[in-house]
Length: 315
Image (cartoon, rainbow, N blue to C red; front, side):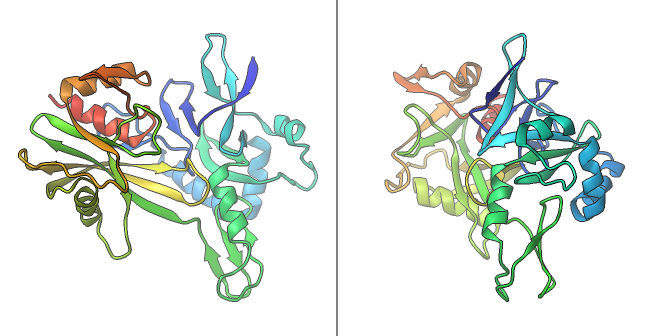
């Protein structure tokens, strides 16, 4: 097999299910029966928690663990005989060779514990989001003393203040605006040519998720919301800095409402029928002509795609 650096932070696992490499190696969490949900047993959940906080137990887990190697946000990939790229999971001995690990002192550069995979501890080396956390929280914000990382990499601790620091997770509402048989897709100026997606925005302090969804819709397309229905969530680590928690929802608006886009954030917004969306899903990631305009939507790993897929298949 040949090895490659992947182009994204997500891929398909050995069962061909989409896997998003968030902190706990979990796919998109959805109520929908059509989307795979990664569940652990009670024993596995408790073992994962023990490995995160117990230095000695986590050290021992190294010997039997599986490791994913990252270069920045690019995972180490394996191309199978069929030509598919799969996330490469290597054992302890392979890691020693790849990163010149000090066998006696467990000196692995920039590693973090991600969770359990096939009942074995799963670690990542140079996983972008958590590594950034350790670089930015090297000193205590209260007293200025140096903080120390838990062996698992899941948190840092100030011995002087006895305060534990955890990675920050920023809530983001991903809203698919819908009306009678249509949904609204928009594009930002920074999007690749032809890419259209749902609306999204960070939740502000003191704001509920419902309020955030209504505010984003009003700000970006100038329409008041009637109802907000939440559908699912997804951890998102595709960037340098804090991890986001994507909260997917459907926002219903009046069928006669006229769009008035905010030119500062959006450059275009259009209504698409269910048939349009089904065609876009079938052709992802290739653009297709919709009303003479080349359009494509986010890939299946994105919560925006899952919202579109669930909505399109409701009828």
